[in-house]
Length: 318
Image (cartoon, rainbow, N blue to C red; front, side, top):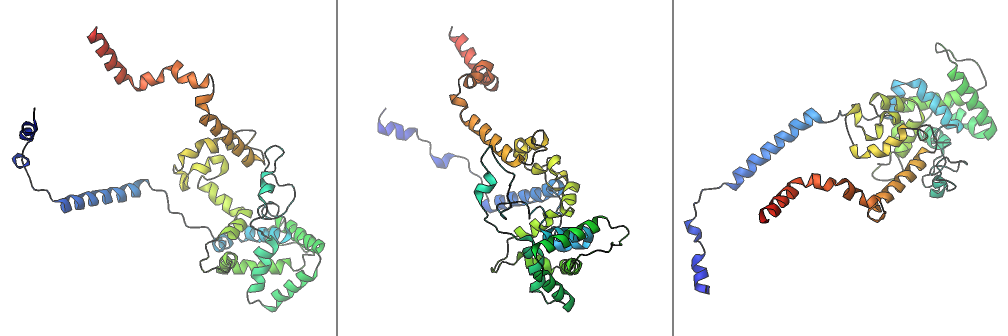
């Protein structure tokens, strides 16, 4: 067959049937259908749009918890104050992997002084009545041991309060300072003060979140939305909606012992997941394990159509 014969065998495009095609119309229809499906499915299956939790909403909803947390921040006994790196140099940081202190190795990268950052500095930076100014002066003039005694006494008194009546005691300026901080929080001013870091765009919520997490209000809201650690919260959306399903293996370990009751669970589970991930990568190189697919013959079940057709072709040739 020569070149001219091959050219004659090529069909003439003008002989093919033709019909008009409106690309803009097709695109518009497809866009409308996809948009309607997106809106409809989002309305049916999307997770609830829960309002953000702020210091203002906390102070308005649970003043007692806010005040008790403020006292612990002032006295240096809150969770953040005793957490250690990356916030402070508290000795005995819990997260270790064997003899290696992972938490301490990271160092203090986000220094947080709970008494000054959460309580005293916001009070100093706002216009204050004379009684608050005097309370700040009294606090600054007292030694650290006196600070601890005042906050410990006031914290105990708050825990034993019945009917809103507080027992008398030597609480120093703590009641005045925490009452004024509660007023600032309820007005919304404290949220801005803790977030302000001297930048044009203030998007660092670290300090407000730390303050919130030291109280019990945020945890109670999280548990109501099924986001607690023992509720598989790491992989849930708000309202117990299914979320990050791929995190099931990671959060699974938090539900069983010894991780469930360990204060070192984060480091232990991180190490375990690193070991499991390494094992998965090395499966093709581990004797015995790499032969499991061949022994179970799962591949023949998955590709059964291919093997059935191949067997039929083989028998046909015979």
